[in-house]
Image (tube, rainbow, N blue to C red; front, top):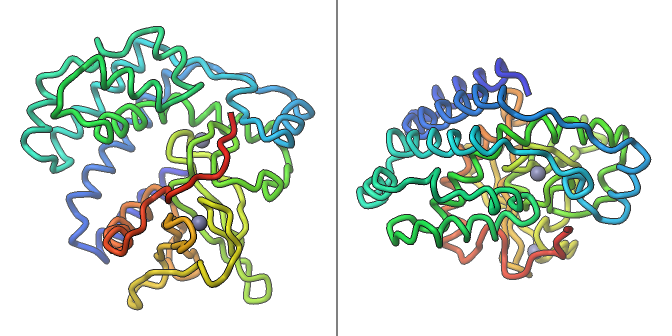
Length: 298
Ligand SMILES: [Zn+2]
Ligand SMILES: [Zn+2]
């Protein structure tokens, strides 16, 4: 992803949606910080093409095939940096700000927990939550900080692992969980392929930023293809941003439509714009991951 396209997308949405100014300021600072931190990422050599294809065909994530190294010191610094940005720009409630200021996040990340983090990020988050033992620092808040701090260390390895997969047909992966790291997709972009083809939908991973193709008319959470369950929720004035909801599992996914965006869609930027629609989806009883998630790759 080029920074130029991201900068353009941010500017475009700032002009169109002045109400998002504070959010955009926070995310722009976060993404700049992640770019700076990324230079400290460890080198990563993926498996060869055959081993990569075999793993994907066997429903195995590429980070479980060859796990990236996350340098502990640099990761702890990244966590502090993200937490500081949250305190400064994220508009958090006062008690959470105070909690983050009081806490020693770096000390709560043990080498042992970090070494296992990519085998199970939920377990890692829980280890940090338990160690901090501060009710102001909730699991969702810490999960967000720990995940955003991880992004810069996984982006380049994910790109390398994707490259090793060559022209792999991601429709064979057939899952809403990231083929690289196993995280559930956070959003999708439907790329315009002209009137005849319609568009192809590419899911985006919030942790390693990988993108993989997934069927367009299918629930990304439970896999249902039943059209009576699937619906788009959106504002008619903004057809470029929609929430794909599923009545079977009550899950949803924010989806951007490139042909209606007027800019090159950048998943993390479009996600910020779609938060308001997510609130509407939540009011109607939908949750990001739904009641049941598809089988998790290891
Ligand atoms: Zn991923
Ligand atoms: Zn579903």
